[in-house]
Structures are given as C-alpha cells and as structure tokens.
Image (cartoon, helix red, strand yellow):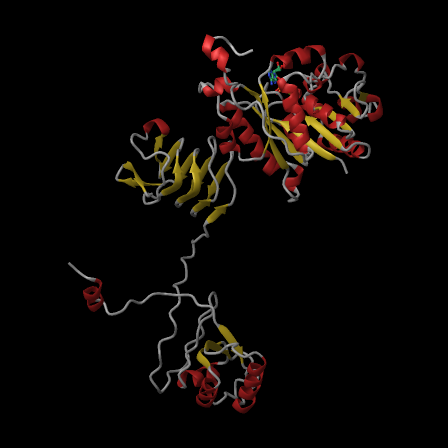
Amino acid sequence: MAQVIVVTSGKGGVGKTTSSAAFATGLAQAGKKTVVIDFDVGLRNLDLIMGVERRVVFDIVNVISGEAKLSQALIRDKRVDTLSILPASQTRDKDALTKEGVATVIEELSKDFDYILCDSPAGIEKGALLALYFADQAIVVTNPEVSSVRDSDRILGVLQSRSKRAEEKKDPVKEHLLVTRYDPARVEKGEMLKLEDIQEILRIPLLGVVPESESVLKASNTGNPVIMDAESSAGQAYKDAVARFLGEERPMRFTDAEKKGFLSRLFGGRAA
Amino acid sequence: MSSPASEARLEPFRLRGGNFNLLVLRLLDPRVEVIVPALADQFRRAPGFLRNAPIVLGLDDLDPSAAPDFGHLIAQLRSVHIAPIGTTGGATDVRAAAQAAGLPPLRAAGAELPVAAPAAPAPVPEPVQEMPPPPSDWQPTMVVDQAVRAGQRIWAQGCDLIVRGTVNPGAEVIADGNVHIYGALKGRAIAGGAENLSARIFALNFEPELVSIAGYYAVRDGLGDAPLGRIVQVCLIGESMRFDRLG
Ligand SMILES: Nc1ncnc2c1ncn2[C@@H]1O[C@H](COP(=O)(O)OP(=O)(O)OP(=O)(O)O)[C@@H](O)[C@H]1O
Ligand SMILES: [Mg+2]
C-alpha cells in the first residue's frame, strides 16, 4: 500500500509547493516510486516548479470528471524516472474536486506508487481539507513567524479531527515539522522566531530546517527542484530531511548563524 | 494558640463519607457446616487469600424462608480469619436475621437502599456511611488529553474542564465550572459560564490571551502585574479578577 503524504501549512506562501517538489524528487531519487499531486486547483504552479508546465495536457479535474484516464494525465519526470506529476487544473475552481473523485484517484495511484504526495493549497477550506483528508502522514511546513506557526497549529488540529484516519478512529496521521525560510542571523537578532519557540507550540517531531536561500527562487524559475542543486544550503537541507523521513539519522544543519571567522573579525570584513 | 492536641479535645471525631472496595462472599447454601469447611478448603489451596479480609455476605441466593444461623456463621468465619462486616441484598427476613446478629445491610454504590429491615431487638451498629448521592444535575468533569490547538474550541457544558496539555495561542477552552490546565495556558480560558462567580481557572504556566470568569474578563494587555509564566489561580473578588501565584 502506498503512503499518502500531505504537504500542508494553513498559511500561504510558506514553501509548500517548493517542499513538495523537493520531497517528491528526493524520494524518487532514493528509488521510491513517487507521484506528486497538485491540489491547488485554479492556482497550479507545481508543474512550473517541476519544470513540466509545457507537457501538461490533462489534469486531475479531467480525470475526476471522466474526461481523461489517469495514465493520460500523469506526467513522467524526465530527470528521475520513478517520479510522476499529476497537475492541477488552471481553469476550474476548487469545487471541481470531490471527495469520491479524489478517493478513486488515490486508490488507483496506490497500486503503482510507494508514495503519493499531496501539495495542499493554503487555507483550511475545502481544497486544503481534501488534500489532507486521505493522508497517512503530514509534512507541516512552517516559517519562523508567529502567524505561520499559528496557522500550522490550526492545521494540526484539523488533521487530528477531520482527516479520514481521525474520522475512522484509526491511528492518527503521522506528523512531521518542516521549518523553511529559516534565517539564523535574523533569528539571532530577534526578528524571527527561534526553532525552540516553534517546537514548543507545535510539539511534533522535527523533520528538517530549510534555510532561507536565494537558490530556491533560481531553482523554481528554471523548473529544477532545489533538491537537485547539491551546492545550495536549501538543497542539502531538503536532502537531509528526505533521508530522515526514510529513517536515516542526520544532524540538523543550517540552524545557527555562521560564526565570523577569526580573520574577518579581525578586519571587520564579512565571512566568505 | 491551639495545638493539634487541644483541637482534638474540642472535636473528638469527624464523620466523613468514604467509598470502599469490599469482597462479597455470596452464600449459596444456608448451612454453616457446609459453607465453612468449603471455605477452609479453598484457603488451604490459596493460603493468605482473604486472610483477615473484611467481607460482605451476599444474601441474594438464599431461600427467603431459610436464613442461616448468622451468630454461628460469624463465629465460624472469624475462626478461619474472615471478618464479616455486613450484608448485601437478600430477602427482608434474611437481612433482618443478619442484622440481629450484628451484620448491618450495606448499600452497593449506585444501588437502591434496601428497604429498612424491621427493628432488631439488639442494639445495632450504624451501617457504613456512604458518600451522599450527587445532585441530579451533576455532570462528570470533562477531560481533554491533548493540546488544544489554534482554532479549536472546547466547551465543557455544565461541568468542570481539565486539559492535560497546553492551550495554544488562538485556542479557546470554556467551562461552566472551573478550568484546570495541566500545561501552559497561551490561548483563552473562560470559566463559570454566565453566572458562576465562584468559578476559577488554574494553569501550570500562565500566559493567556484572555481569561474570563462569569462574564468578567481580562485581556493580555489588561493583566497588569499578574504572575505570567507561573502556576496561577484566577478567581473573582467582587468585580475584579485576582491572580494568585501557586508556585
Ligand atoms: N527556503 C527558501 N528560501 C527562499 N525562498 C523560499 C524558500 N522556500 C520558499 N521560498 C519562496 O517562497 C515563495 C512561496 O513558496 P511556495 O510557492 O513553495 O509556497 P506555497 O506554500 O506553496 O504557497 P501557496 O500557499 O501560494 O501555495 C516562493 O517565491 C519561493 O521561491
Ligand atoms: Mg503552493
């Protein structure tokens, strides 16, 4: 049976789609048969970040309404052959997705894949509820700011009460915290929440900390998930997080501001 | 100046209700010469079992017209180190016979009181006092075993509320009775419903967004010099809210 993982946050713009693309790619690179579904109907951009926007013919709404077969809508990634993408519709609205329809799609995908990632839209309304409903695990993406932590807390409450697992009184959805856009220097200055402050409120296991990094924007503009950029700190952080997700132990990196070296302190210059 | 000893002289005893767990020895045969050897036999196989244990004699299975000789039975039971202290159930006549021998009828918790046995000739010890039954509108305390998260609202209707985790910012807990939080209170806590002025709020780490008792409230900015971050009890004194540090 495939594991269904929702990437969610409540708040918008915190890095769900970036993280979905990175995670899906990372899991596929580890040899897992992985499909990532864009649930953000009307605002699709997973296909852009994955660099497959020019190959989209059908989308999940077409599949659910019976206009296309699932196999026609799935896009096979050209870089990692165990990775597929199921895009969202640009032209329809969220009401086009139904619980029954999504259930059928997930059931069918379960036969062929190890992991089904669901990139949730922002908010706690229908689209987000549908994205998390079938989840076995949840990656809760949080930025080091009060409003993001608050919204993540809300979405955790929703996971615990309105997911299929909760409704059927099964084992709860397994929760993971992924802190993104973490800027240790600004945290040190007190402009952003500390990792410990976030954990104290959310109290779920920490999967990883992805630092604020310019390489993320570059990566999404070129349609290459940032995890493929082995040079970048964000790419390495995502690699670590995927490894932890698969059971490996890796120390947390990128959580402390870079200490100025002895020489640069001496001459007052910036660390390279 | 009153030492505990002088207090004790002023007040020689106190009467308190109490609930006890007792073994019931259900009598299936009225004949003492059958019951006791069978018990002794059981004891040889499980020495120590029941030794000096207070027990209650269950009378439900006895024929109403054939009460055992309770005086003899009590003596025989004591000789094998079993201490009968009362009876439960049974027909009126059987109960009365037991009571005459010094074994009062006990009421099982939650059961109806037995119809009073006819007055016994001998002075009889008082039956074991039980807790008075709760009033009919009594509701068990609501217990929440998890953190209450932002956007969640918990309402303990007509009763107290116990939260075993934190109440996070953006969460709201409401009780018509008291609110007890065995964690941090970082959201809103509302106690006492509309009119219970004596309701209180307790929290192990007091960092609320808002607290309210019976309609009187204080927001975070209005907490003044309340002991934030401490173990705190909130109560109403007249129309003002008081914050007591408990630890
Ligand atoms: N680690 C990072 N460093 C710098 N920028 C980042 C990082 N992660 C995400 N971003 C940027 O933040 C913006 C939002 O990211 P993304 O689209 O992944 O968020 P989202 O949660 O999916 O948003 P939405 O709620 O609209 O779906 C993008 O411009 C992205 O490039
Ligand atoms: Mg997105």
